[in-house]
Length: 359
Image (cartoon, rainbow, N blue to C red; front, side, top):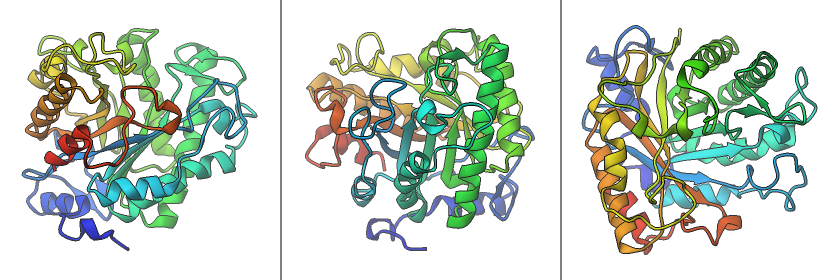
């Protein structure tokens, strides 16, 4: 396996997990990571840094049902992934549009060309033994029928489970071809569900996890919750709901922006503790034993001093909690150039400097 030069002095995540296994902290057989429902374990080894990286946006751009490349959406180049890896950011999230991925609807194969865009972006991260997330950008809906259907409805759940089964099978096959360690790849269950309660989403997530595991996926499953995945909904008295994962690992997947309303639209923060205050309840709570950690898969803000300090305070706080496995900042996508969250792998950007400071 070829490792980029900037990673030669880094401890690989696989090595960290193997060390944990040797110490009895987590059971492993080959690339199998100990069953998440068996005991509370963490993906991040004690003393190892939190993974940091970026969302490589573009595939999710544009109208939900627009399918013309370079008109309705753009395709990030794998060289962009390599550029982030070379400066030390070894995690990435690749959002995608569900309709473009399965345009013929339930029971049909995924669009191999569109799927390959995601796989090509993911390849450098697997080669570098980093961490990459495939994320369906559906906002609580499944769009493969040509219309948006809530996944908590009977019809929506059937479509959704078909979709996640096919996505998991395709990614599992690719991982086998790549000889990818199981913990180097994650599948998100859904981007920013918000229309229903956590009670309504919980059985859907359990069904999806079961389908994903039956499809052969042994990597990390990222579990989102309502309120656009805000961590502020959780506290010691209102902890994250549990899920059932017969294989593991699965992690809590949250979004935490730094603007006044946690909207993620690129406005500046009005407080340097915007992120830390929103995360406080989740970090003060005890995670159910089904979870092997937390991933902050979207955060960000512009380059003004307050927003940069808010990002610094948040990432520092998360880096000191061993349960937080990875953070991927939103977003490197040239179609969002005018959005305050737009970021590139430029070390002179103070936000990039903050990201690198946590490694």
